[in-house]
Length: 247
Ligand code: SAM
Image 1 (cartoon, helix red, strand yellow):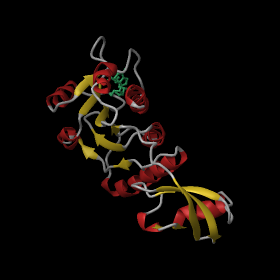
Image 2: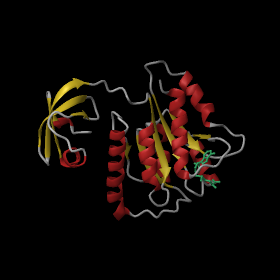
Image 3: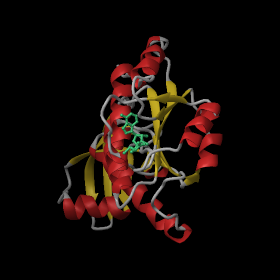
Image 4: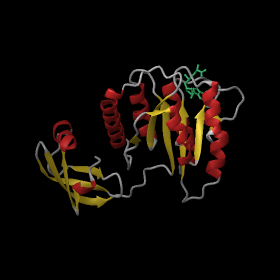
């Protein structure tokens, strides 16, 4: 369970809200049961429940745990908003695989209409999905889900990353592995790097967008000879990057 930093009080942990309800109602937790809790920043521990109520669970630290489940290359997925609930699938699966963040964005061929009124609720849901997937997959941190950006705002953020991989399917072009292998080879054991993976909408990117991305510093890369669905491309790129760079 991910808890707030102030819920760790020395050796004692107080869990409330949805997590407490989950422990009592879904997990049928009882005094003596052990759980893993993390503040998502610097502390993670195996704790034992000492006192349990429907709305609050108190536990004592049994063992402090190392926070070593995060990949050393931080991959953020920028995803042109896909149709229906596909963004939820992207967030859930890429959190399990190891992404550190998600940036939904709007490009020329994005089919979904942006609705500012719905953005708050949607973000709340996406962040809940990221938290639950991070708990399920024993991540040390919950990936960030950022507010939707315009294409221009996304381009302006390219400078914040060591490498920007722009997924663009083209025959015989540069492939993702061609840029990731040198990145992995250049990293010493204790070094890390940040990579932004940019994935287009169902209808792909326009040539104008491809040029603008390259001008803004992105490397345009292919993910093999088959065309992947918009929701699959980020998962594939992330898996390949972590395969090459994770210890
Ligand atoms: N018909 C579209 C086109 O020709 O551009 C296909 C778009 S694809 C369904 C959605 C997005 O997934 C693309 O914009 C791209 O970012 C990514 N993608 C899918 N397959 C890819 C591949 N083989 N190489 C690189 N990117 C790929």
